[in-house]
Image 1 (cartoon, helix red, strand yellow):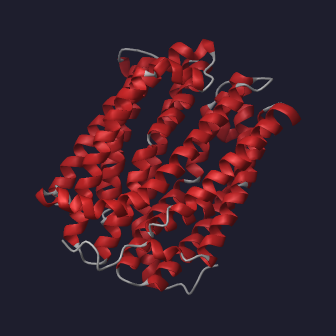
Image 2: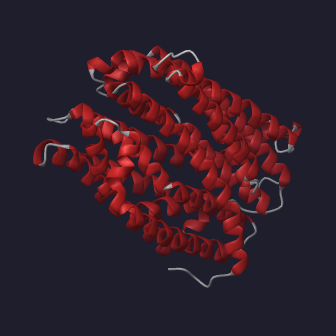
Length: 456
C-alpha cells in the first residue's frame, strides 16, 4: 500500500501532521474535560453534554463544508502560485461562514424545545439539555470562525499558529470547567451552568485571536474582500466542493443524532447506554487524533500537488499517508486493547456507565483500521475537490447500513447497546472499502481547479 518512501515527502507529511495532532489533542481535552466534569456532577449532566455536543456538530455542518471548500480552493490556488485568488477565497469563506453561523444560531434558538424533543431527549434530562443547548448556540458563530480560520492557516501550510490558539482555548475551558463547574481553587461553583458557559468564553477568545492572527500574517487583507464580479466567477468552484461536503457533514452528524435517539430509546438501560455512548465518543476521540491530523495533511498536500499540476504526486501522497496512518493507528489499538475498562473508568465514575463505555471501546478498537482509512481517504478526496465521493460513501454507510442495523440489533436482536456498537463497526468496513475503490479506480482528479481559471 505504501509507495516508494520518498524522504522529502515523509518529512513534509511529518511537518504538517505533528502540530495538528497536538491541536486536536487540545480539542480532545476540551471535550473530555466537559464530560469528566459533568460526570462528577451527575450521569444526567454527562449524558446531556454528549447529546448537545452532537447537536452542535449538526449545526457545524456548514462550517465543515466551508472548510472543505476553503482547503481545496486555497491550497490549489497557492500550489498554482495564484496568491490573489487564494486571498479572495479566504475573505469569501471567512465572511460567509461567520454570517451563516450567526443565522443558524438564531434560528435554532427559536426552535430549541421542538428540536430537543425531536432527538428524543428524556424528560428528566430536558432542563439540563436546554441549558447546554442555549450556551452552545451562543458559542456557534465563534466556533465557525475558529474552525474556518484554522483551515485557512492549514491550507497555507502554517500549522503552528492555530496550535497556539487552540492551546489557549483549551487552558481557558479547562479552568472554567473545573473552577466554575466544580468549584475548584475556591472559585464559585455554578455546576452545569459553569461547564456550559466556560465553552462560550474560551471559544470566543479563540475566535477573536484567530482573526487577529490572520490579519497579522496577511492572509486576510484588503484583497480578501472580493468584488462582486469575482464572487460570481470564483464562488461556483467553492460551492461545487462545499455542497457535497455539507451533504456529507449534515447526513453524517444527523445520522449520529438518530443513533443517539436509537440509543436513548433502547428497551433496557437507556440512560446508562446514552451516557456510555457519549463517554465512549470522547475516549474514542484520542484514538483517532492522528488519523484526523493525517486527514488534514493529506487534504492540503493533495491540493497543492494538483495546483502544481502534479497528479502523480497527489496519488503517491494519498497512498503514503494511508499506509502510515493505518499501520500506526492499528498498533495503537492493539496496545490499548487490554486497557479498555481502565480507559472507560477515567471518564465514567458510575460503574454501569463504565461498563457501557468499555463495550463501546471493544467494537471501536476492532474498527480502527477501517475508520482510519475512511478518515484519510475522505480528506484526500476533499483536497482534490472530489467531495461528492465521500458524500455518497458516508451517506450510504450511515443511512443504509449503520442506522438500520443499529435499530435491528439494538431494539430487536440484542435489545441493548451492543447492537448499536456492532452496527458502527459494520458501517466503517463498508465506508473504507468503498473510498479505497474510488481512489484506485475512479477519475477523482478531474474535480481540481484548472490552473488557468480565475487569474483576476
